[in-house]
View: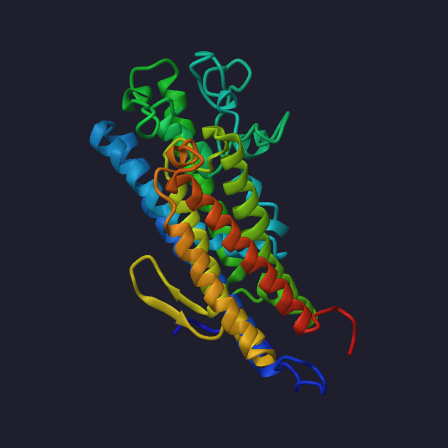
Length: 380
C-alpha cells in the first residue's frame, strides 16, 4: 500500500448535499496518492531512458541509438497517463512546467537542421547560441513564438527520429548525426541535456505530490472547499477528453489530414499517446492504478465513486461510456498518420470519428455529474 496522503477528515455530510463527504474524502485522498504514484512511475521510466542516452553518448552506434528510441517510447507511454491531472490546477500546470515538458507542436528549425535549411537551429548556430546547458535551454523555450520549443518530450523525439518524410514509418535520423555530422558534438550535448532537464522536471512534479512533502502541493490542493476540488478534478478529465483529445488531437488532424497535426509525429507513436491518456483517466475516475511493472499499486475509490454516492445510475452510465470511448480509441489503427489520410468512407477514417463522438458523450455525462452533485464554491 502506498503512503496515504495525510489530510484531515471531511466533516459529516451536510443535510441536502447530494454526495457523501466520506466517499469524497476517500476518493480525493486517493486522487493525491494516484498523482504521486503515477508521476513517480514516469520518473522511473525517464531515468531508464536517461541511462540509455548516457550509454549512447559513451558508445554511439546503431544498437545504442535504437535502445534510446525504444526507451523513449516506453517512458512516453508511462508519462501519457499523468495527463489526467492536467487542466485541474495541479502542479504540472500551476508550476508552468507543462510547456517545458510536453508542449506541442514544435518548429523543428528552431532546434536543428531541416530538409529546407541544413544550417538552422540552436545546434547549428553556435555564434547565436554558444552555450547548451540546463540553464540556457529552458530559457530559450517559446522565445519568439509558441512553436519555438527547446525542451520536452517532443524536442527529444525530434532529436532521436528527425523529420518524418517516410510514408511507411517514422523519421529516419541516422545515429551518425551524433558522431560525424556537422555540429555532432553540440547535438549530442543537446540530446543529453534535454533528457536530463526532462527528468528533473518530472522529479519536481512528483515531489510536489509526495505525501511526505508537507510543504508541497497536496496540502495546498486540499485547502480548497471539497466541492471545488471535485469540480476542478472532474473538469480536468472532461477537458482532456473533450478539448484536448477529441478536438485538438483527433478532430484537428482529421480535418487537416496533415502529419504536422499528429501529436507524436516524428516517431509515429500517437496511438500510444491516445491509449495512455485513456488509461490515466481510467485511474482517476475509477481509483485503480497498475504501474509500468504490472503491479497494482493502488485500488481505492475514484472520482466516479463520488458520483455514485449521489446518483448510482449516472455513475454506471459514466463507467459504461468511458469503456466505450476507451475501446474506440484502442480501435483506431496505427500508425495514426496513415489513418487520417485514408479515404473518408474507409473504416480507418470512420474509427477516428467514432472515437471523437464517444469522447464528447463522456464529457456530457461528466457535466451531468457536476450538475447533479450541485458542485459550486459557495458556503453551504
